[in-house]
Length: 115
View: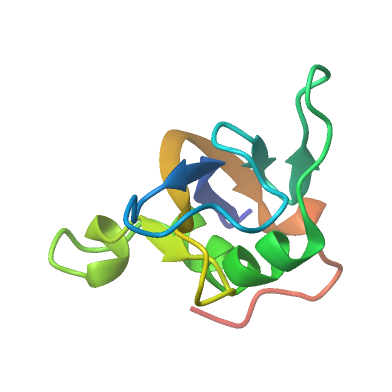
């Protein structure tokens, strides 16, 4: 049987105050965070919220940040996404954590194409 494994990074997404010359005008607060493990978002019990607009800022980047990339790829080095409000000094830092191994067969019934 063909090996159908692949690896993804676990991610932590955290609110930071990147541009201190501008105030944090949105409802997110420094330190608000969540984890992405595989296809699951996990929120800490002590702070189980993360703003909808903040989530919209980071969602397009999460799948790419989960996947291994070359050292020279900007996705390997750039980790902060600015808030969608241009007046807000906040940003969202995406940190790669441990790699986990998953199996194609556990996520889809589509067959792998021939190698």
